[in-house]
Length: 162
Image (cartoon, rainbow, N blue to C red; front, side):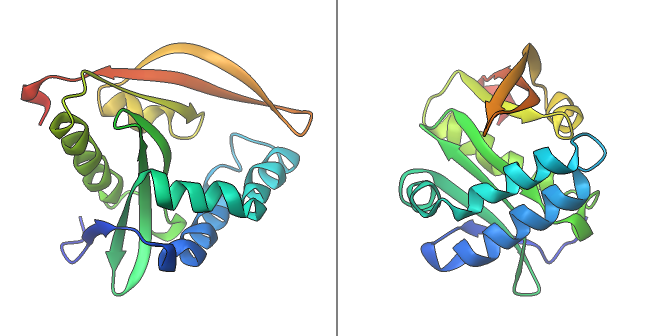
């Protein structure tokens, strides 16, 4: 684990770096699970300015900072759904995801949530399982006429999780 990593709330000023991390991470880390066409469509979602503005304005956005750079981010929608969760390609395996997840779960518990859910990529499925999530179902989603496989996952929360 990198001790100097700090977790803080994201702001509109972080959007450019968050979107860059999103693209770079998907392009390198997910390439073993998704083909180039799927990755191109997935990463093109950064062009939807309304979506990203809504994320910053309406979701809890937590970012991990190391040496003044964003090395990961996670978003919590409606206090109980993890919408986005990414760790920079160069910082995989350094427990940053675990740090971000712990803060997301703490927030859900503070909000008295009983369940956390997420639609999880093939790539992220194993991490979410380690965090105690269970696969509810395998899904095929369509984006720009291209099929993607992901998993609807849930975790029951209780006070002992926090």
